Every structure is written in C-alpha cells, then in structure tokens.
Length: 442
Image (cartoon, rainbow, N blue to C red):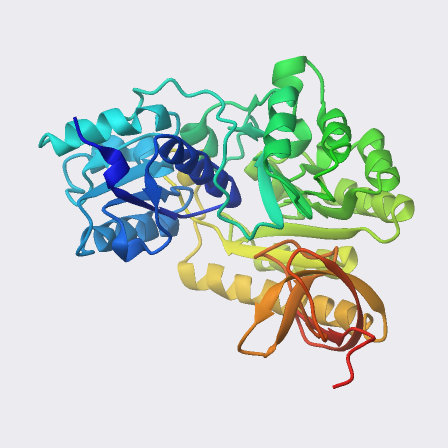
C-alpha cells in the first residue's frame, strides 16, 4: 500500500468556473485523506490536470498541458480527469502516454484506487468506474472573499454547436439543502457566484418546477454570504418571479449573464436556440424597466455555418441596440458529434476571425461609452487585492464578474481584500475604470 500522505499533490484546472468547482471538490477528497497539497506545480509528485474539451482549442490546450506536466522533474504520476477523458478516452488511452491515470467527471472517489494501481506499474483507465454523486466539501482556489457554487451539472438544451450534453449528460440539479450546507462551509464570502450550464433551469428535474428563486432565498439568508451573483441565465427562462426576486432581494447583485449566441432568427433556429431577436430586446427592456441599474452581459458566436455578411452586420446593430455592459465573442468551432458539424456552408477561419474582431470593435465602443459616463460617479467597489504593476488597489463594481469583465483600479490609503469601498471614478478606458477613495490625498 502506498502512503499517499507522504506525497505532494498539485492540480491544474483548465476551462470554465464549473470545472474549477470540480477541481476544488477533488482537492477536498485529497485533503481529507491527509495528503499535502501544493500550489507550486513544479514541486508536485502527483499532478492532476482537470481538462476542458468543449472546443478544439480547449482540447489542444489540455493535451499540451498534460505533455508539459509529465516533463516536471518531481512528477511521479500525471492524473488526467474531467471532460477530455470523459469524452475521448478511447482515442487517448493508448496515444497519450504521458498520462498515468485517467478519471472521468464522476470518478473522483476512485482517485486513490487508481493511483495505487498506477504505482504498481500500470497505466490506469478509471473512466466510468466511479460512483459519481454530489460532493459537498471544497478547497477553495479562488481568493477567499469570493467563491463559485455549482448548483447543477449537465444540460438539456441541445444547442446544435455544443458538446456539453455529450460530455456531461442530462441536466442534474443538486439538492437545495446540500447546496446551502456547502455554502455555509465556505466561511465569510463577499460574493457567491452561482454557476451551471443554465442556472435558470435549476430544480425542474429534481422538484418538478423551477426553484432558482427558492435557492436564492435560502442562500441570501445565510449570514456568511454577503452577496450572490448569477451567471449563465437562459433568456426564455427569465420570468417575472425571478425579475422581482432580483429587484427586491438586496443581497442579489443586479447583474445577469445571459448567453444569447446570436441575434438573427434564422441563425438562432439553426442553433436550436428558442428565442428571437424581438423577444430578446423585449426581455432587456423589461429588465431595465424593473431594475434600472441592472448590468447585462452576453456571449455570441461569430461565423456559424451559412451566416451571411448581412446577418453579421445585423448582429452588430443588435449590439448597438441592446447596449450590453460586457460581452464575449467566439469564432464558431466545428465540433464532431454535434448536429452543426454536418451543416453545409461552413465558413473559413479567416472569415470567422474577422467577424469576431468586428463584433469586439462594436462592443468596445459601447463599453467605452458606458464607462465614460461613470466618470464622476461614486461606486461601491469590492477590493480584490493589489495590482503591483500599477501600484494601486484593484477591485470590481457590481457590473463586473471576476476574470471575464473589467476592473476598477483605485488609490486609497488602505484597502483590505474582500471589503467594499466607495470609489470616486476619475478616468476610464474601453474596459476598466480608474478612481480613488475620498480619503486619498495623492
């Protein structure tokens, strides 16, 4: 028997924030075994790579990371887990020899069994061997003042470009009481960020009805949770009840991330998206009428098969009309095993990339204008820490989520990570704001 308490474990988590939560839960299993976890990857003896396989580029990044991981001097075993082996184990098992152990998305409970076998001289495939199920313990990898809470896994939406249902399976909500207990264990959290492939669908599979409002009320009732942010809300699932809860609940940040993927009805239908351009604009109008200070974010795919120049221009016009606070744009990635892979009218990479640039250019003007209008305002800013290159503090206002949106750089005599400060905005650029606290004399 191997004494794993004498081994140093490290983890590299690739992909989305949902993957990050999975990594944190895997770390808790390792920690509960009495093992040592190091953030210095080069010192790890057992190095875990939790992979993403959503797009061709993410698979390429995962494989390059695995190969690089095997090259560290101290590494004895490389464990590959997550979406890549879950979907592609048959292709990887014999070719990716840098990996010693393969685990799927539901096999974390088997990590020590798999490692034991590997140390006995075997390359091990444990994909599909685990018991899966909900894991409530976490070892946070975010700064201590904010954390993600994954409230469900999988997806039922079956968008024609997306591999997630093939990899993660059907939508599965986690029980409310377990999520509340998990949130309580996180300690004092300034910002709890709810994530799933579609948070607005929460509860339908488990309770027979949407229960996002109920879980929001339970979480915001916790003393240790100062605020809650919602990511990944599907537009057709945002109803009057949810709007009222966001409006009236002071602990819910007035911010919604609503992935639309396109604006034009023909493309939306090809994507198997359920909304229309008109319905989307009406939703944003309703949201802003009911919650005037709400910030809206979205993501869009450029260059979907058969997309015309006119439809790309129409999407640009839609951005100008919708006036999102933040947006992300991605070139369509042709993924095998998706219905869109078989569509005729696939566009070249150069066309897709040019359209991404065009969309970013339009949104940059919108964002810059919105931020210029913030100059002279006093904003409540959550301090995320110190930016040593700029020699100032850095934080976020309510209209910015971690990692994906802009920041507020500010000067102050003192600011503590995880605390809120009133910051007078003195300048802006296309993405970020600059300011100072009232008691700063510099």
